[in-house]
Length: 56
Image 1 (cartoon, rainbow, N blue to C red):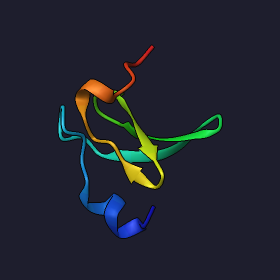
Image 2 (image 1 turned 120 degrees about the horizontal axis):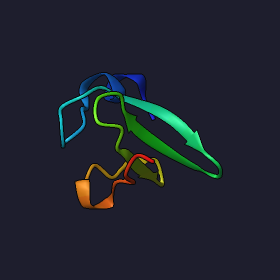
Image 3 (image 1 turned 90 degrees about the vertical axis):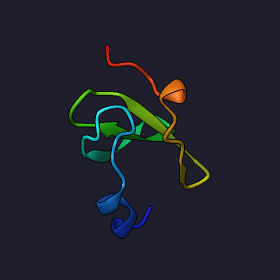
Image 4 (image 1 turned 45 degrees about the vertical axis):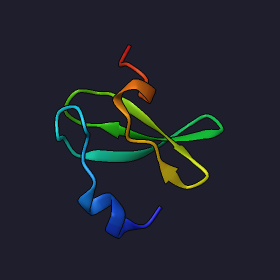
């Protein structure tokens, strides 16, 4: 994922900053504000709150 894209996208739930994080074999975008983890599928971030993994 390009650094330019990471600089402009935000969490759709709280508008917090997202960080690219490896999660096993997967890659996720994790919000620094609310903690939701959004999946990245085939290099495309899925920024849907319904698709996000809730913080533990």
